[in-house]
Image 1 (tube, rainbow, N blue to C red):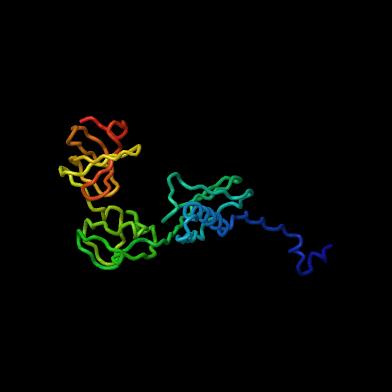
Image 2 (image 1 turned 90 degrees about the vertical axis):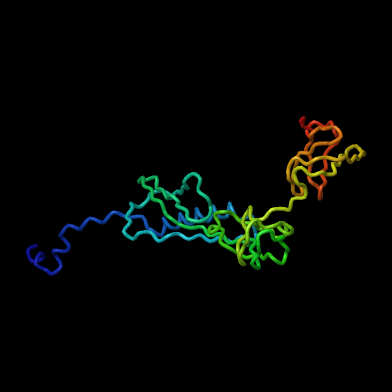
Length: 246
């Protein structure tokens, strides 16, 4: 036995082995869980729109992060009120052993929006040639956007705009066809009967908007819909939902 202990390598056989380091959770698996959750959120919010393209990016995790290997499948959670656009943080959790970490990422949403083709002054009536559709990242448009150029034709600008400006809600308005205090043709119809009387508009109104009008013959105030220049359509007098007392 003594000669065996003297053989090269004998100490390696008899010496105690070093304890193995605790297993850690691969950072790639944490990033993959966060990626999958954000992709699912993007698909749920934007997937039904064929004109929209989404891209999910997860920030690189700190290489110094050391978490115990998870004995169960990782789960994910989004903070209340999280929007599926722009900067997003998704929580990745392990049930056993218990730990959690928030992983930052970003959901980019590209969609065609209405943009001015040329510079336009305040009060300009928009023509179709004044507008183009350009793909933009919606996360850079916190004030909103418009996606229907045809619906803006005929509306007037409330402020001057430079070329390639994204049209935001409220930048243009439908022209007023009825002005407060002016005489209007008050048209009433129903049951095969049509009546037209003179009225006084009590508010401004654009096409399709609801305005209050005083019937100058009866002095009653009714609500009607602007149907054209100085023209408002209502139900026959006496229909409760259309009639208000002065």
